[in-house]
Image (cartoon, rainbow over all chains, first blue to last red):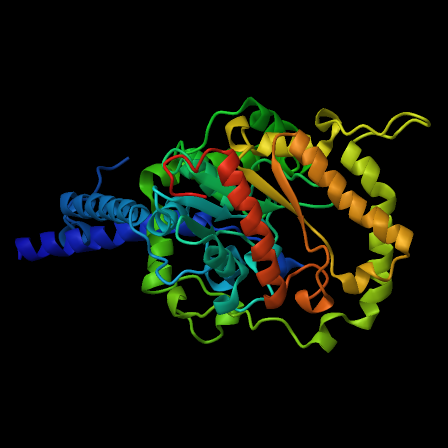
Length: 39
Length: 408
């Protein structure tokens, strides 16, 4: 049971880490439409 | 204030140490995967950054990925010909299989390697010029082909694609250049962004240099699963970008290339250029009776290009000055047509005085050689390739790339 809790926590942490890394990518994308979308 | 409750539901389910270890391991794993993608080219069947793999569809190739692409395509023993510039050199109006840069490769032969990094709406140094500068240490035999016109030099870091400049800057891939620093402080299109935006671009560049988030998720979007939706994708929410073909269908039928409603507009535009062009190129109003001397130091175009291209890169930069389609040029009177051509030649002369190589292109082409006012059709692309190939060979000879005997 303790091992299962540890593994589940670790996997949840992994998911959070991936989401954090992905969030940096999404934050770097501009919010304005691009050139031919804007014109 | 009471003591925190121990063994609540969350504490019973979660082991904090393992959770934090998982966060750190996966975050670092993502960084490592991103770093791996900066060293391996993901753009396998690449002809150009067509709209589906470009910022127009919210796909922003990182500096690392562009360099990985270039390293996969170029050869250190051959002359690297990097094509930059805007939609004209991107080849808008040409199908991928009949792209002018492919014709350029064919005409230059095996001693050269051509890579088309031109982007729609880009200024001369933008995108392709950043890659060329970043690669210059690895590929000493290099010619950068780009395009300008209308006496425009452009901002030193670009406009629509300035993200790539700051990404490369964050990785330390660009040289120190006082002229560029000055240009970044003074060019109106740069200063209007404001210090907050400039600071954000710099922070983003530095952060991505360490954490590789753009490199990883762009690569995932291209190869596996696109997590950024674009209206053009419709119901294909997650289709990877590599499954989208280059959408350029080639030039429209001749009857559709020159809409009648544009005739008067273009005539006004061209006459305005003929009237204002000499002063814009020269950079000052000519006093009556004074000799018409071209001085690059007084020309805004040349000063902007000096800021954009650090000194060592100017001689190997070929700036093309394109003509508009003869469909519109021939609406001008013979005297106006002569003045129009002279403006192209004046730009070539002043750019050569400024230390660049320059060439007018499009003169003598037919209206079938254009897909519209400015873009070359596939037949025009062939002619363009011929003109550029001759100039690139000449430039390669002047730059001493022939030493070693492999380059004519």
